[in-house]
Length: 366
Ligand code: F6R
Image (cartoon, rainbow, N blue to C red; front, side, top):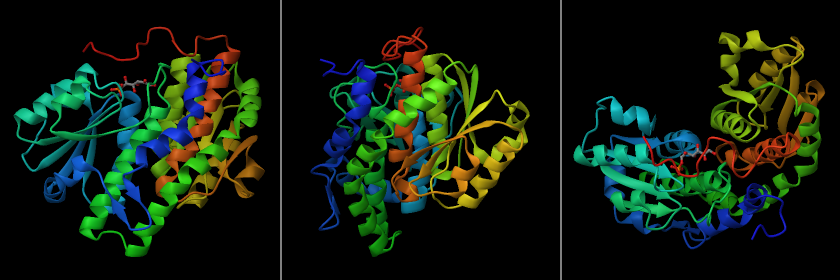
């Protein structure tokens, strides 16, 4: 059932072009500009009248929520807050009936997320679920929702759930942007068309597997690793670090690149690998200067760059090239080499990739 792959995780990483397509198929119509999702359409006014959107989730799903925060605010100009479900539920949060709460969960069974949903409902909020498991507790407890179509995710470390969650959330943001007129018509159509190119770009990003394996061989014995990214790729850095921690047991931290100078830079020496997510994007020059700061302290730089990049390439010890993609959609592509890198490091360290120690696929305890 691993389909010839050594591990479920690798199989699931490679399924991403298809499951992203499965997730937008029938919903996204780039030719007519229509985005059709019943759960959104039936509740469109609630979304449009929302004072703000609150996203609750845990772990990797929380990272998808962070990506969505950037996308919703940019596309639909609706204020978004992203909360760890566990923090939200225990701190007497302010919830109003004009709030829309989006709960994101692969399993649909995460106890803290479920409790946060119940609390939001008691306070009169409209709660929308983004789940992967049909009929799961969270999908039943929410007022409406949209499924990710990732198929069963067996590997404990989440991969395809993350990219399909981002896909669903991007479609919702685009639908709301179209209703509100917050994107120009040409930008709106451009994003719709680019969404349809994402499976191909993810396919190309998967071709970095050999490079990722080489980089993995060079850093498999590291005891720490930093991940940096800016803007849409800051949550990708967090997710990259989480993937490395959970399957290879290497201590890793993700940071917004500009925060480095406020503390983590003290950690940098010739022993410290720093993975920088640095595609051609807004503020590219800023990330180039962040990379220079690492280099001048002899840190080892592994950079994810856009094909054809020269500036970062000159500074980095290793580059992993991904195809060109617009800023807002880039997390779907930049996250791929980071998944592969963690996977290979974990395999080389002899770790149980599909079932890392101390972790369970769904966290039904509080
Ligand atoms: C990370 C991972 C966990 C889950 C988290 C939430 O690879 O698997 O961090 O993302 O436990 O799980 P769901 O999405 O099922 O609510």
